[in-house]
Amino acid sequence: MSVVRPLDRYVFVEWMKIFVATAIGLPVLLVIIDLTDHLQQYLTRNIPAPDIALSYVYWMPQSMFMAMPAAVLFATVFSVGTFTRHSEITAAKASGISFYRLVAPILLGATLAAGLDLVVGELVPITDARRNDLLRESKVQSGTQRFNFAYAAEYGRVYKAQTLDVPGGRMDRLQIERKGSGKDYPTVVISSSEAKYDPATGRWTLGAGDMHIIRDSTPSMVISFSELRDRNMRERPADLMAKPRDPQEMRYGELTRFIHALERSGGDGNLLRVERALKIAIPITCLVIAMFGAPLATSTQRGGTAYGIGLSLAITVTFLMLIQLTKPLGGKNIIWPDVAAWLPNALFALGGFVLLARVRT
Image (cartoon, rainbow, N blue to C red; front, side, top):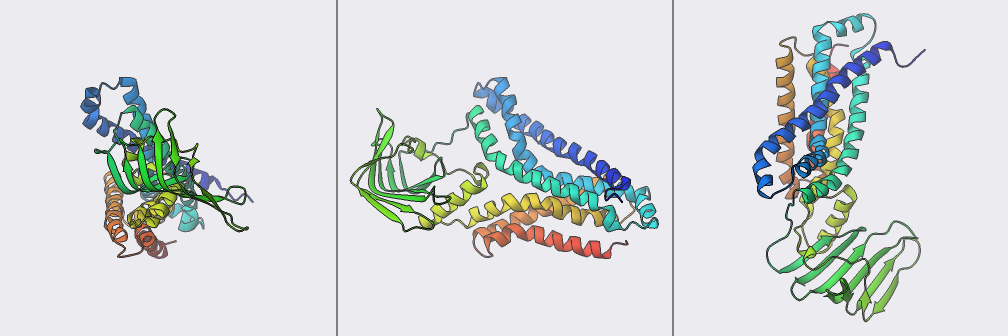
């Protein structure tokens, strides 16, 4: 006997039609709104029209990342609502198919959407960086000095320094950290009293210090040096004045390394921990919101399209408000940062279980 029934294919296809239309339509709508607000600003910068158009192509992953749970919700509410109004759910129950079995293809689609959203979330920092280049977004701070900062560089490296003097091309109390991933790629921590930049060669020279090579299974090694040239340290002093990147501009692993470096240098990483947890919590919302929306869509016979739109918008706004309410609580460590990020999902999941338990099967 086939596990996939014709009814499963029908439910899945009807749900997928609405999901795809909404997952593409919402980001396109956001693009139109943003372009309307900022077009004059881009033209003032003399940005070519092809670059403006391409920048919005690169912006699509970011807008899709937040729109994906809403697209799942719209698809679930509209498809289940349509099945209810056309008595298709009643007919399925009369044939011995429970409501839980009927919505199983929808939950499968929501799970696939969650996986897709996780992938999109990892693409966002890459596409956003390209978009910022096209739109000539300035990331440079004013001033020529910086104190007690951490800088997330390439190759998983993090720089921490007590002071940075851009005109003099100098850093004091520099520490470079690179997280390892096994015995063949150990963790490296370099501590130096100072570092000087040579504009002619574009390289930094580190003063007296130590290099710690930390392996998982063998004893650590310490190498002292009076002078060291780091070939992978290619940032100019002005580059190190760049503003700290937003959490949205860093992938999950990069954000994790930045949080650890920030906390080791005495900074507060609680809010960043909330943002990191949201990179996973928001995609998982796709599954949670489907569990919540499916039984809710059968709870009333009123309305049609207008009711579905209103219900979906109300749930989406409520969820976003919960995120905005819990985020500062996690940032202030009033509740654990990871709990703050997952609390909206937990509340909606609890509501979904209650509604599923109460639905007539």
